[in-house]
Amino acid sequence: VSTPECRVCGAPAEPFMSFGPMPIANAFVTADEIGGEYFGDLEVGFCPSCTMVQLVTFVDPAQLFHDHYAYFSSTSARMADHFAAFAEDVRRRHLGGADPFVVELGSNDGIMLRHFAAAGIRHLGVEPSANVAETARSRGVNTVCRFFDAAAADDIRAEYGPADALLGANVICHIPDLNELAHGVARLLAPGGVFVFEEPYLGDIVEKTSYDQIYDEHYFYFSVSSLSRLFARHGLEVVDAARQTVHGGSMRYTVARVGAHRIAPAVTALQDHEARLGLHDARTFAEFRRRVEVSRTKLVGLLQQMRALGKRVVGYGATSKSTTVLNYCGIGPDLIEFISDVTPGKQNRLTPGTHIPIRPYRQFVEAYPDYALLFAWNHADEILAKETAFLDRGGQFIVYVPDCAILAAGSGGVTRRETVSLP
Ligand code: SAH
Ligand code: TYD
Ligand code: ZN
Image (cartoon, rainbow, N blue to C red; front, side):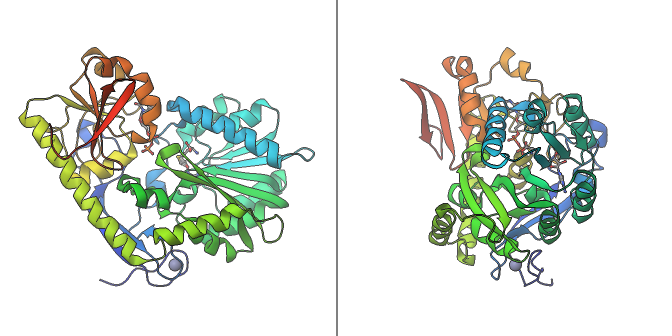
């Protein structure tokens, strides 16, 4: 087996963990489609030269983002609030000039851009998944249905002029050629313009052992350090970075042309933090792999005990992340009765590879299980607040990030007990 090349700098990358054969994370199947699913190896590596953490086996983006993409951003009320605040922050800080122009990559159902549209600000969403792009248009968000790349950057600039703010959330890590992305950004940005984007943060993934962030759509796992190196190759620099609590720990990066903006102290502070975490050191990722293996043993052991005790366990949230957990741990319908999800397009389908039925939310409410395995653990605040009736009736949540634990109603709120076995 030849050593894979780093997708950013071309140096040899070191694979540090294989999760085995995986189906497409968001390919929720019908019963008829079983047997025809695509499986590819999910393997992640570290580049010692430029520190980028990345998948070493790739699925073509056209197989992931299409006219029936399953993820609709607006299913989370908390994320809707988050993107309203993100839009407001960008407006206040960066759009003070006359007739500003905003472009968002991966604008999905318009969760963020609709705020610019409502304010009458010139805007454009670049969104290759036709179904979600159509939802955005129906909400009055100007959207072009294509992948962002260097050619798209040139076409947009020719039609609308340069962008004062280029935005993205949970999309830059979905773009396999980061050098082309950076090149496109440099072409499209106005001289003093900013590229502001947020993505799951490698520092949180390592600290929380949130290995379920690793799946086919996430080609890269970013840090301030690795992105600073990437953008330096393209006359750009990271001028600010701010941690976000959403999606289990994200980072919002602000990138601009070299010298155009003052570099905020947070950038160096975070690079120091990353050095302390060992994000430049292959040993950190070898240890990460060992913790993932322990996590699998604990979660599977817990579910097997519950089955032995005759407890009902259902999943909460058919996330893309759950595809990695279910397939890697070998958890199927024998351990989880069904998964509740509010997304109509996922309901009455089966989880990729493991074929656990996905049911509408009302089935969860109509007959509460003993335990709900919280696959949407990144939305725990929102979900725990919404599920007080379940908790009050003795229902309990199982989580596996940052460790296996059971959440139950307790005096003055929700109590958490770390667990390897039932009491
Ligand atoms: N920004 C939204 C959606 C994230 S899902 C949010 O944070 O909730 C990622 C989105 O990026 C999908 O809608 C997908 O179709 C889109 N996408 C994938 N590759 C892209 C590319 N090269 N350019 C623009 N959008 C892309
Ligand atoms: P999310 O964790 O945002 O993303 P990913 O697919 O990238 O891992 O997905 C959340 C899923 O959980 C989505 O399918 C919607 C569902 N969901 C519910 O069913 N109920 C809820 O209250 C929330 C917040 C989400
Ligand atoms: Zn590299």
